[in-house]
Amino acid sequence: MNAMANSAYFDNYSPVGDFISIALCFVIIALIQSTYVARKRSFLIFSGMVLFIVIAAYADVLYHVFYLNHLHDDHTLIYLFRIIYHSSLFIVLAGYIVYIVEVQQLEVRKKKVAYILAAVGFLVTNVVDILGSIMGFGFVVRPSGNTREGFNIFILGYLYFVIIVMYYMFRYRSRLFSRVMTGFYSTMAVSFVMLAIQGIFNQSAFTTVTFVFPIIAMLYLIHASPYDISLGAVSVSSFENHIKYNYKTGKDFIIMSLYMRDFDDENSHFPAEIQALIREFSSTYFRGAVLFQLSNGHVVLVADTNKNPDFENKVNSLLNNFNKEYERFRLDYKIILGKAIDEISKRNEYVRFLRHIQHGMPENNVHFIEYDDVASFNKQKFILDELGDIYRRKDLNDPRVEVYCQPVLNIKTQKYDTAEALMRLNLPDIGMVFPDQFIPLAEENDFIHVLSLIILNKTCNMIRKLIVSGYEVKRISVNISVLELRDDDFCNDIGTVIKKSGIPDDKIAIEITESQNESDFLIMKSKINELKEHGITFYLDDFGTGYSNIERIMELPFDIIKFDRSLVIASGSDTKSEQMVGSLANMFNELQYSVLYEGVENDMDEKLCIDMSASYLQGYKYSRPVPIERLTDFFEKRDA
Ligand code: C2E
Ligand code: CA
Ligand code: CA
Image 1 (tube, rainbow, N blue to C red):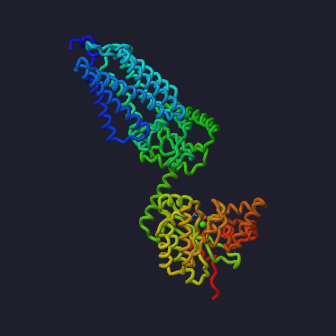
Image 2: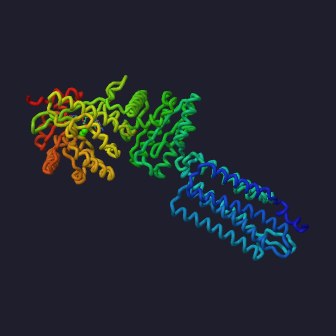
Image 3: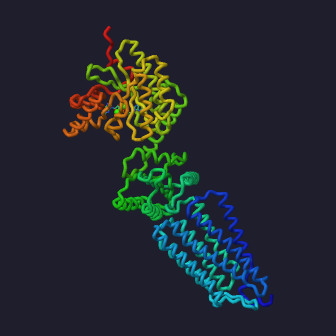
């Protein structure tokens, strides 16, 4: 044991550092097991690094244990564990390189260069380390039991990796959200400094620990971070917490929302270039602003008004620069800006509030929040609550749902004997609500089918009354949303309501718009066929607005094609369109469909439509939609 006193290196070793490293690694593993971390590729690399730190720490302990207890002539185990120790640490160092380029999402070509640099570093250091011991210029255990470090490849190798990691971090620093990366860089710096200090004092006990620091930073900043590090944004729930906090502490703040519809679906996200811009914009203009990602394609920047007293100027320069970028990318956007509104903050409803504004604004526009927005948002909320209530009660006579009707002129008989039923809501306090304000809401929330059944029920009852009073009613059409057809009970529900009213099935027609979706198409086909057997007539609504795939339309057994008002307008504006619409109508006629023109507003429209093979005409020229009871003004009594 005496001999060892000569070796300063061994004197300064204590297993404390290695055991701390092992313990820390187990703490990290326990933390990972009990929290949510995204299992990406970078996480795999990270886990591998943790594993190799544990191996290195054990190998270091064993290397010293075998040294202290070795038999004088056999040094194999000392060499073996020393090389395991060193190569494990080099794997971790190489891991830093692989890891950093992964997180930075470098292009494959650039990644490959980094991999080669990592592999070369790893191989050269190990080979030199082993050759040094074999050829005697490096670490050797003398027969006396003394050790000699010789040429220290470890320090050189370490430097090599540090320089490369630093290079990548610096060179591609703009690829990652700076607030997170600053934390990461400073941890790296602290561990490099600590290792250097150890070297100066000829210490080695804490070598492995210095490798654990960056690992902890990675776990906290990258894998368990609420930030999306490539965008620098935080999630919706953090957004809601932030609003709650600001409201409670009475902090005034401004909200800047950017929505880009191109990236608004489940699988898409902002491309790297746009991410970099958003990151830059959100960190450049406002002090202490926080960026949130509310959904794909939608980010919101929240900034404290007190910290940014000149926010109006800042907003202006932000918009100016945004416009310059827009010239470059030309991607559709909707921007909403404004000071926080207490009423919305209190209810923590910004997500819905912003979506509401977005819904009602045109693309490529900037909207400044004003109190009118809150009023219309509140109105929409009220309508939604009422719709929910109507849906839950399922009262087919619910007085809040009113049927209006627009009579349709039958060209052949020159009479009004059919009509279209159109829905209105009559709600307490706000009165009459038109379809554009509630049909989309009802569809999004799955309330639409109950509404349709109410309209159908009221229409059937009115038809019965009309017939009983002696009116000639050929049929009345009701509108059905494509979504409703997906329900297995659809045909049954319709059949039951008509049956209960006691009118013949053929007094009812159903209007549906075309669907582009293949599965909806098949469902539509089977449902139409089923209901047609009962004598229900089918109208294809809004022909000319959507896809208008004529081949597909002809596979569906419609009776009447409703040409949208846009086709009437187009025909009136130039002869080419007129010829086209006219020949479409002719073609449908020849195929035994009838053509109904919608939106006939004046004599000119009427003449045009009659010339273009109309069978039915509907529009303001004849009547606006009127309460269903008033159909008596249009329908004629049968000759007594
Ligand atoms: P739609 O089925 O195309 O109904 C025709 C719309 O055009 C009606 O608007 C009607 O008032 C309007 N209109 C009628 N004549 C003219 C005209 O000469 N010129 C112009 N510019 N417009 C005219 P309304 O009642 O506001 O309904 C809008 C849409 O709401 C309907 O379009 C339909 O898609 C939907 N809707 C209405 N009631 C129901 C319903 O009970 N169920 C479902 N699912 N949707 C409905
Ligand atoms: Ca319709
Ligand atoms: Ca229509």
